[in-house]
Image 1 (cartoon, rainbow over the protein chains, first blue to last red):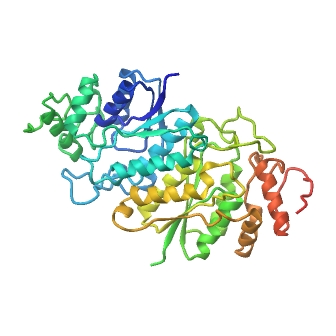
Image 2: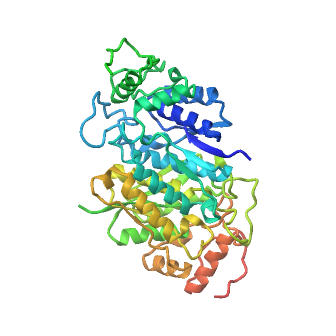
Image 3: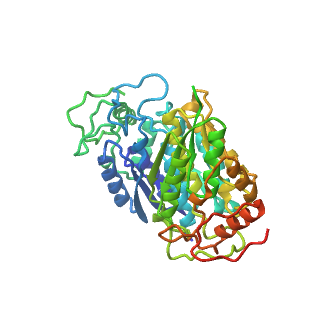
Length: 231
Length: 231
C-alpha cells in the first residue's frame, strides 16, 4: 500500500514546497490547514490553491481559537507588525503555534494510520522562532513515539521537516523544479483582502531576497511596485 | 509575585482534584476546558462548577474541532462505548487528545508567563492510554523546554501531573481533604443531558470502586440505582 502523510499547509512558500517534496517522495498527502484568526485570510485561499494544484488526497481546514490568547502580532491587532526584525524572538511569533498544529496533525495521522507528518519549518530564515529549530523537531518526534497508539504498537509516525536546513533560495529552487506555482502562495504578514503582499514586512523581505538569490523571477503579487532586491 | 498555573479542567473527578492540588500548592489558577465534541456536554457544566467553587483566577472554554477526525468512541457516535475494557488501547482513547490539550495550555501559559501547567493524568487507572503515562509527561516537559520563548529565555514552565501515580481512592481522599465537591464532577462516558451518570461504563466503574475503596460515600448522581460495589 502506498505510504501516506499528513502535511501542514499554511499557504506560504515553505509549506507549498514541503507538500511538493512529500509528494515527490511518494506519499499520498493529506493536507491540513488552520484558520486561527491570522490577519491574512488570503493565506487560507492560497492553501486551497496549493492543495488543488498539487492534487492532494484530501484537504482539511480546522478552525482554532488561537487568537483568544493573544500575545502575537499575527493574531492580535493591538500589536503592530514591524517592518524589520528586532533582536530575540519576533512579535510575530505565535505562542506554541507549531506545537498546536503538530498536535492536530498527529491526531489526524493516528486516525489515518499515516506514516509521516510533514512540516515546512526552516531554521535559517526563522532563527528567532524557538519552534522552528532542529532540536524542536527532534523533541516532538520523541513525544510522538511515546504519545501515540501507533508508537505503543511499534509503528512509527515519522516527523519530517525537509526544509529545516535549506536557505530560502534553495527552497525556491527545489519547489520550482517540482513545479510549485509560487504565484499561488502567500508569505506576507499583512496581505490585504485580495491577497496582495505588502513587500515590506520581514516575511516579504525574506521571500524577495530568496527569489533574487535563486535567480528566479518573483511572481508574488505586491500591492505596489517594490524596490528591486539585489542578490 | 504569586506563582501562576494553567490547569486543564475537564469536569471529571481527576482534574477537579488536580485543580485543588494546584491551589493548595499556592498557584493562582487559570483553568482551561475544551468543547471538542465529546458526547457529554454535561462535563463542561461540571468544569464550570469546579472553576467557580474553587475560585480560579479565570476559566476559559475553547472549542476544538477534534471530532472531525473521528477514531474514538468519545467523539464518534458510530463507535459504541463498551461497558468493560478490552485488551490494549480502549476505543474511548481520543487520538492525541492530551497532546492537543497541552499544546493549547502551553500557548496560554506563554502568554500569561505562567510558571506551571497542571494535568490530571493518571497512570494506574488508565494504563491503556499512551498519553497518561509518566514517560509521556517527561517527553512533553522536554518539548516545552525547547518549544517556548520562556524556555529559550531560561524560564521554566513546569509540567505537573500530581495524580500520575495515585490510585483512584487516593485521589478521592486527597480531594475530599481539600474540600472538592465531587457531586459537581462527571466521569461518565455516556452521561445524559441532565448530567446523570450511567453507572456502568468503564469510567463509572473506576469511579465507584474508588469511592468504595476510599471509604467515602459516593455522591455521584446516577440515572438508576446501581449495584453496590464491594471495596
